[in-house]
Every structure is written in structure tokens, then in C-alpha cells.
Image (tube, rainbow, N blue to C red; front, side):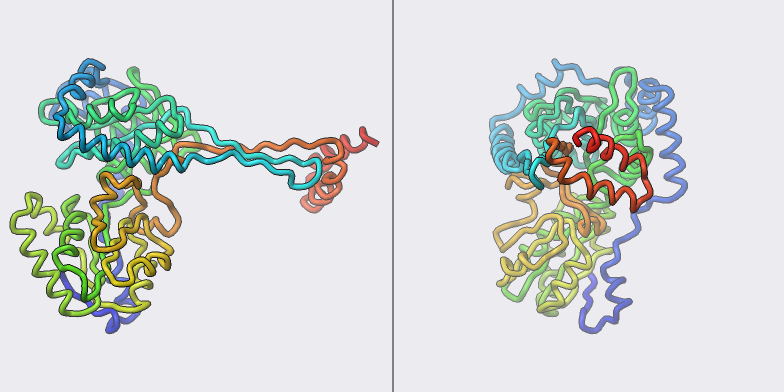
Length: 431
């Protein structure tokens, strides 16, 4: 990876060093996405079948997966796989169960009761990539919080493999995590089915899940109309930033960088290290680990867009908060203290024994996180992501007497006479 010395860069060069690669989305792609969305909206299942054959090379006219196939996949799990899944599920359930929001109630003034209550969404669509890396873990990260939140309809969509079927482990985990329906479709057509519904599948209220630039563009498009579904997060390629000092293991740092780089050629990884010698050691470790990495070609492409930045002290914090990484791994003597000062990051991994992989799979935190700098304003997926909140207020007659005059005057200030009258007519009836 290229090495940059932060102290020698001017402000423009610093911005350039932290600029993410272009996502590849362009007007031609958006036009094609809109055409596919409109076609699925108009033709439903027939359009799904056509695009599945065109893009996945699979011919099928029925894309809902029968329950017998899901049951068989779950029954076929090996003891080793089941044990690993159960460990991860236990931790994810335990941590997310703590996130269930409590209803709130208070008298803001005598006779004026205000409340907030949480309700689960009615339905959610969970998109699970199944191409070069079938993301079994994403099923857990989405279906389990949805179940904990109380969502009644939890619909999984995942693209077919070469044999025309969904990856069997994805099917098995969908059952273990309580998915209520599973559909074999991917890409833009799957997002369209979730957004608009087809003859086989009803539309959902909110769409979750990662995907390539086509899936991300489709999610953004269906969420534009007020009548469209909500989506979880603005999506971009996966990314990680690793901060390391002279005491850090170069092998550990390299392994964390590669764990993100192997996701996608568009993934971005950045190292922030304390010296040139650490940068050199990390580059040596990267070369060694790439030599036997099955997805080395993908990782190498991602590394070309990344960088190792030499920085120390508060410069590290400036880099972190400016970049707002999806994953932030801290391998420094002051990791715990540094983590407390970070304002913008999707998820933080503290210390040498906390690789980013544990959060991806089984520590209990959620791995569906804001990318492309969205951590400046967005949180990762959590139980509240699958809920909505309603406020309620109840006034007694005395409460309206106390509050009413202020409301009347505020309505006058805005020139909204009907608002004032709704209060005045009641006050008059009380006098």
C-alpha cells in the first residue's frame, strides 16, 4: 500500500488522502435501475423470472422457496456449523435484547401528560447477498433484531447460485432466525419485489441489507417517493481503518486490513500508523498474507485505492473523525482512551485481541453499519431500526386552562387563526 506522511500534506492533500473511490454509480446505471424497477412494478413475477434468467443464468417461474426446502437445509447443518451459529445467535440476541426501547411518560406541566410508545414495523425485507461471498452472518444481523423488535413479517431475499437455488446455509439460518418468508431473487429485481410487491410477494415497509452498487442504487430509488419503503442506511462499499502504534503486531494490522479488502474490489482500507518502520512492517505482512489468500485478486484491487498514513497524537483523531470509518480497529497503547474521543465511526474494535471479524460474526454487535462517511450522521442497524415511535398527549381541563393561552399566542404569531380557535373555543366552553 502507498505510504503518506500526514504532517507533510497540505489541506488539499489530506482531503485527497481520505477521499473514497468513486462507487461506479453513474447516470447510465441509474437509468437501467429505474427501467428494471418499473418493469417489475408493472409485470411482477414474470419480470422477476426474466431478470433472474438474464443476470443469474437461472430459469425459474416460482421464486418463493418452499418450506420443505428450508426445513431440509436446516436439518442438514453439521454439528460444527450449528454450534458456531448458535454461539453467534446467542450473543446477538443477548446484546440486541438490551436495546428494546422503553415507553416514556411525563407531565410536562400540571394536567398535560405526554407519552412516547414504540411499535414494531409491520413488515421488513432483508436482502442477503449470495454471490462470491454468501453472507450468512447478515441473515443473523437482520432477522434476529427484527424478531426481537416484534416485526411480524420478516422476508428474506437472496440470489440463486449456479444450481438455481439459494445457498443452503442461508436458508438454514433464515429458519433458525425466524424468517417468515424466503424468496430466491437478487439484484435490482429483488429490491423492486420488496418495494412494490408481485403476485407472489406483498410489499414491505422497510428494506434492509447490503449489496453491490446496483442494489444500493435500487434501494435509493425506491425510497425516493413518499409512498415508497424506508431503507436502512445509505450504502457504499465496505471499509475499515486500522490505527496502530509501534507496539502493534504488523501481522494483526495486515489481517484486519485484508479482512475488509477481500470483500470487494471497491472496498477501502486505510492504516494509520505511528512511524515509517510500522508502515514498512505492515506492507511486508500484507504481501506475506496475500500469498495464500483465496480472494487475493479482489484484495489487491482494494489495496490499490487504500493508503497507510503516518500520524501520531491528535492527528490520529482528526483523521478518524474526518473519515468516519465503518469499522475502526484500534491497536495502540491508548486504545481505550482514544475510543472514547472518537465521534464518528460505525463500530470500534479496541485492543489487539479484538479483530474486526468478531463484530462481523459473533461478538453480539451488529455488522450492518454506515459506510461512505455516513457515520457522521447515521448509526448502525439496531432494534430501533425495526420500530417506529408514536407520541401521545392527554390534557385535562385544568391542563388546557394552563397551557391554552401560550398556544393561542403562538398561533397568533404564525397567523394561523384556526389553530388559535381550536384552543379558544374550548377555553370559552370551560368559562
